[in-house]
Length: 80
Image 1 (cartoon, helix red, strand yellow):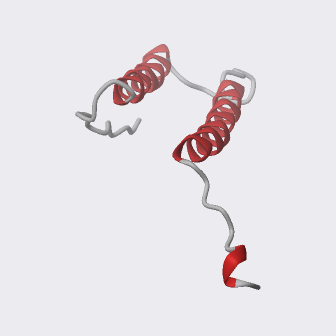
Image 2 (cartoon, one colour):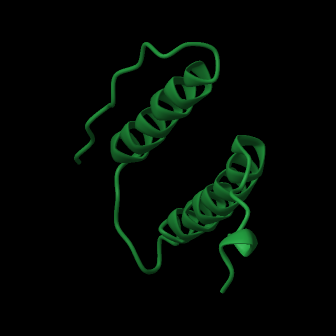
């Protein structure tokens, strides 16, 4: 390969579009899979556990959204 034919680097915009799309698709897939846990014939859970799950998801979603506005964020830990 010639020195003149080096591969072009992706722009920051191209990298964002690629990574954001891949991660969003994975997140949506995982949320659909989590929804499968709502099948009461296969799983047993309390309303409090469900609230804890979705509260944690909402907090993390709010945090992720805020990162698009500012750099000051803190990860949230989760366990049932």
